[in-house]
Length: 193
Image (cartoon, rainbow, N blue to C red):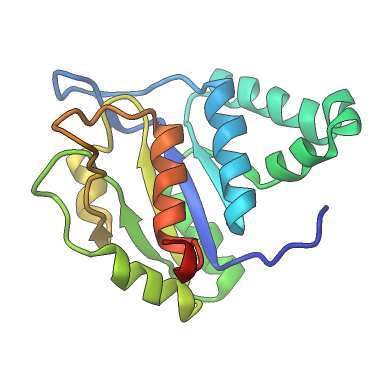
């Protein structure tokens, strides 16, 4: 693995429970693009672990095969940069497993930050999170697939980040794009912000 400083910050991509466009609680499918692109962004910004939260055993198997190809198989041998990035991935069934894993790893429960594209949900500013990261506080950034995290998951968070805003009202970024933008807002050097 490349020489890099790993931060006390993890990312979790939640596939269940999430909501659909009607607000129903659903489980979403793991995608190859989310595995690759979020791992690469996480590796670039110094994330320690990228948790893929998916309780469905078949989905776990699919994700595991993709990760193994790039970390243990032919893909990793021919593309060591991709191997390094995908080595951040841990597949688990629940958010509790993520929090327990981080607590065991760092010796304290992480400060859990949820993301939400819906206005009016935010409770913490990016500047405060940048300060926590600079103080090496254990942080867990939660991202939801489909139409986002359920109200239950949002209530479990210690804080909710403001939604990303662009040039207008349109706010339907892929989760891969949202992760990259948020990691940059929190972790890019001050001179680059």
